Image (cartoon, helix red, strand yellow):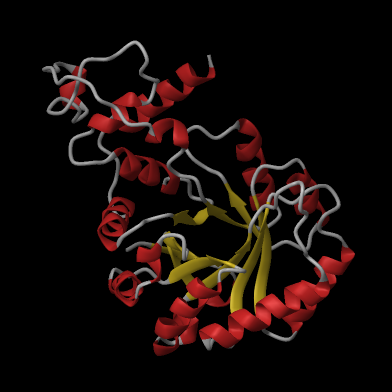
Length: 297
């Protein structure tokens, strides 16, 4: 497992950060969480209102030296019809519930998904700053690509920006990442495997030659179809799954501390951990950039 710097004090974070979610029952089992630790993963993220997932972390993490693990909570984006409650009372209750159910002395970070204009006002920042002063919360951040994020980074008060960074991400997200880096805001990644690339492929196998064999694509290369997108070749890289390629590409971005992954089971996570430790095959990065250009057309 590879590690990168996370915040002050010399703490390190594994580049793979699993989401622990009760809707994916495999991720809240003791065997999954223990397996994560055995693979060298030292970071986990759960929804702030997912007490089942938080309790699962509470069964495992108290056995580990606290400074050796990173635990984050995420406030999900809300349905516009039902605005989420970010009041002082709710935030304090959720943090207290998380601390009580995990048995931890502090939570490393709290991230708010896709904040709307004016949604994170002075009351929110006063509440999280009080939690930080009480040493119950280390960092606060935002995630997503909403227009409000640039203003929040510029205003200060954030320590983390979680970016939807992948090989299809927009120039807006890339600029925002540079803005965060310039402001000394830590950057996490998510959505490394976008929906457009996850679509299944079912194509007949054919022989490949020349440059495709050189890139390691020959053994599994298949005939292109009219409806294939510019990234279809990712499904046929020898020794890699498309998701593993996407994760490795994401982690090639040096400003990222870690990438959040949604692995339904330990075997999938093991493959992603292995991908995080590998370099992409020679020439593949160039082919990805060509596909990115084609994708913009």
